[in-house]
Amino acid sequence: MAVTPHSPARRSTAHAPLAAIAAAACLLAAGCAGTAKKPQEGALPASDAATLAALDAALAGDHRAQANKARDAYRHPKETLAFFGLRQDMTVMEIWPGAGGWYTEVIAPVVRDKGRYIAAGWDAKLDNKFIQDGVKAYQAKLDARPDVFGKVQVTALQFPTAMQPVPAGSVDMVVTFRNIHNWMGRDSAKQMFEAMFAALKPGGILGVVEHRAGTTAPQDPKAASGYVREDYAIELAKSVGFEFVAASEINANPKDTKDYDQGVWTLPPTLRLGDRDRDRFLAIGESDRFTLRFRKPAAQAH
Image (tube, rainbow, N blue to C red):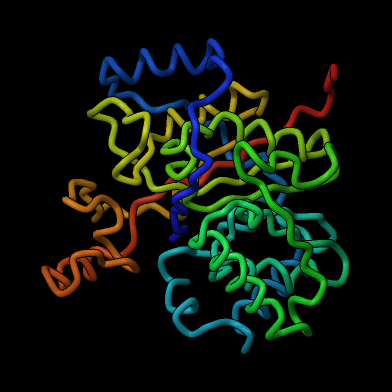
């Protein structure tokens, strides 16, 4: 689960939301119970056999922490990355991999020889101990296994101080896992999506996983519980230019009731309530999540 850094640089968004977001916000404020229409997934290109084999090898590798391997049953990394269309020859940028680099362990070795893995994390230049400690911990993880992570490129993407992590139009795929709520809490979700859009090549893919809110209540604009409505996320991505390709239920969990005092962090792996009702929350497992694939249109006027 992505950690939420408390940045002193937090500020309100500098740009008015686009019409699509305004319309979506009005819809959500009305408590609309409908969900976004999802295109057929059958048209998605599949990851090739060599990439799938490389994913198997990465998942079984001794470079992975045992605690991270224990999360595979909830996070379905092979199925998720195959749904996104990962290939070994891609340049892949992950946004906010966190201090522990859960998906770094999976993606970096797959693209190490034929592609490239870029970790766009927090901005270490900020005067914030939490962020600086997290950046150091992540770098220490990379340094501990140069045979696996020696080619990882580390950069920063954080509003408002570091908004161009790579040259525009240079990345084949951008992925981010359980982070939209972090950006919403800092009034920077739109700017982060704009930066991801700019980084991708025309035709490039954005893959997103996030804790899924229910549809009976309007979206909290700060996403304080950690949950985000799926239709809200889709409209947010579309508002900056992305085309919605498909959604998957790979990471769905119908046991998640989404009504906890401590939000999504009540569930594993955080278990914020400690021993209180621990067995109950362990039985639920990790959160219900939506898994979305977007595309940057192949033809861009700018």
